[in-house]
Amino acid sequence: MFQSSKVHQAGRTLTTVMIKYDLVCRKDHRFEGWFASSSAYDDEAGKGRVTCPVCNSKKIAKAPMAPAVKGGDMPSPAEMRNALVKLRRHVESNAEHVGDRFADEARAIHHGDADDRPIYGEATAEDSKALKEEGIAVTPIPWIPLGDA
Ligand SMILES: [Zn+2]
Image 1 (cartoon, protein in one colour):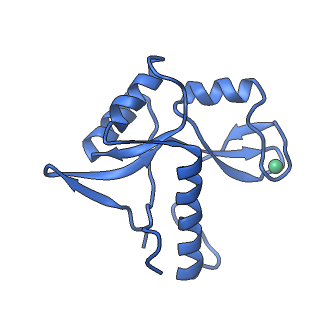
Image 2: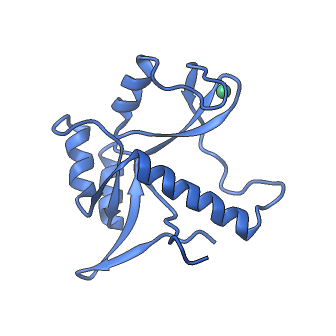
Image 3: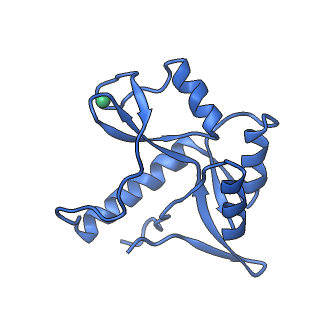
């Protein structure tokens, strides 16, 4: 159902990825935060710069992983598409696109060799796996094409 954009480049399949945390405030509002690394999250949260978009609470914690299959009503395809378009716009306006340098850039940020900032870009499945093993949490984004409704 989710359509990740896949780019074929020099025989490699690249998927758009970025670093995302599911966060929850003490009133149980769930939202997503975009951070370059787990230390970036700790730093921002420690300075009280992470706030709940619903109630402005600064009591934020990382949420447990959402279950893959939720009960209840499934969103309609149109709702799903809207949500994905919003996600894409959110990422594009909040994170820097680093293209296929994603893996290198994520490592540089992780090690403090580059400015700490949200980034997104394309990575191979091997890159994503390697990054995860190095403690850098990346998440594939269902990257919906715009303007083909
Ligand atoms: Zn809240």
